[in-house]
Structures are given as C-alpha cells and as structure tokens.
Length: 325
Image (tube, rainbow, N blue to C red; front, side, top):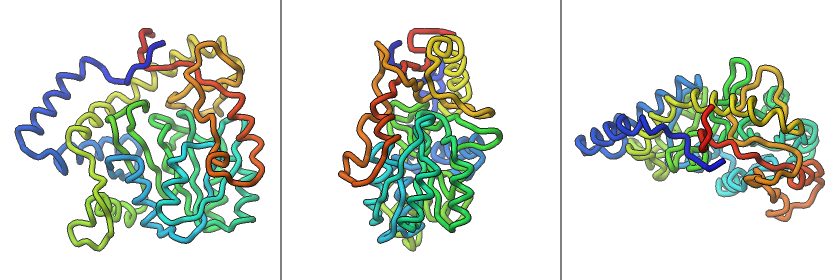
C-alpha cells in the first residue's frame, strides 16, 4: 500500500481558488484563511482553537502560559522526543513515565507512582497512533484532584473521539500537529485547543511576538495563509478520511491481525497508525522504536515501554493508497 497524503484531487480547484484570493488580496499571513481554519477546527473539536506554524509553537505557548520554568513535568517515555524537548526548552525538568502494553500510552499506575515520587507541576499525556489514551479519564481525574496541569499531545489524534469527547477536552490544553505525514496535513503547522480563555488570549499574542501590546513575550509562530487554506480544505475532509480508514481497517486488516490494539467501547480512532503486536513482512516500521529514557539516558524501570518498542509494528493504512473501499 503506497503512502499518500489524505488530499482529494477534486479539492484542487477549491484550494487554487483560495490561493488566488490570497494572492489578489496581498495578505499572505494573518488573514481570512487563518481565521477560517481556526473556526473550522473549533467547530470540529468543540474547543476554541489557535493555529500555529508548528506543533512546537502551540506547545511552547501552553508551557509558557503555565510558567513551567524550574518545575517538574512528567512525560511518557514512549513518545517522540518533541514532547519532552518542548518542556526542556521551556525550562522545565522532565521525568518519565512507563506506558501500557495494550495502548502504548501512559500507564496510570506508573503515573501515580511518579507523582508520589516527583511531585510534578504538570503532566504531558500523549495519544499515540490515532487513538485516545485508554486511561485518560483516570489520568485527568487524578491530575485534577492533585492540582496538576494536564497537557494533551494530540499530534496523532486527528478525528479521534471517545463518546462525545475529542482529544484536548480532558486536559487544560491539547496540541495538534499538521506535519506532512499526519492524517490531515498543511505540510507544517499546529493547533492549540483549550477551554481556558486566558490561555487562548495568551496564545493569540504569543504566536505573534506579543502583539499588539507586547504584554506577552512571544515569537513568530504564525501559520501563513496558504497553509491555513490547505487546513480549511483538509478539516472539511477529516470525517471522510477517518471513515475510509476505519472501513478499510475493519474490512481488510482486522480479520488477519487479531493481535492488534483493541479499542475500548465507544472509542473511534483516527487511524494515524494501525498497530499490531506481531512481526509483519511489509511493516511501515514502528511508532517509536527508541524510548525517550534510552535517548535521554534516564535511569529507572520502564518494562512496558521496552516491551512495546520490541514487540509492535505498523501495518500500512494510507488514505486511498492505491486501494478504494
């Protein structure tokens, strides 16, 4: 199955019309399509949304808003280095948490132990592979009871849901990525979602040097109008893309891969990855094959993370990758 970006050819005319409008207006940033992209994402994800030029920009906005400098943040070891690096760049100290074998996401039991040990200010939970962390309800409730800030790394989770809730709705903020390989993409880009109005206002200024009054010490993390226009087209297609992947998985993959991630009742995955726990001939590799504790040379016991790194593989599940459903 050949890799394809989830973009419909019939949307090219619509996108070119958007780009023609951008060229004609001479407003290539901070314009109509940035606002439209945010409005569409807010409507889809049911939370106020602020667009950025990258996942990193959105993450840094949230971390700086909560003033994590000098404080401890817990992060799963089974994640991409972007997650701990964002906190380190914001001046925080990172400690790592083991994952579960069944969902590859943060272990609630190990999180409780690490909270007792390190007394963290915040927790990064990561939704891996397109599905939502299976223990997110317990993680969110426990963090709230302890007064701990909960940040959701939603980089893989486009189109996922659990009941009536979308990624980003359990924590104080959620951060999405629109990197080129994601379920929907703008090439590069990110989005912060939050129900915290003060964080929303902070993020709007943070991405633009703190303008207009410079009360916020931000930098340039603006998305440009051309990328935002792609985001508008892609957000309109998100349900369709996820539905195609779900039908493909159910029809072609589930019958032959019984040793796969099994989702809880009521959960819909965005199917960024199709994860199985057995070697396969034509794998696209692993979600992560080198844990953060190995990269960062962190001491501690992470048995599930190490097991997962050795015992999972990803089956190709690219949107319409030479196969129609």
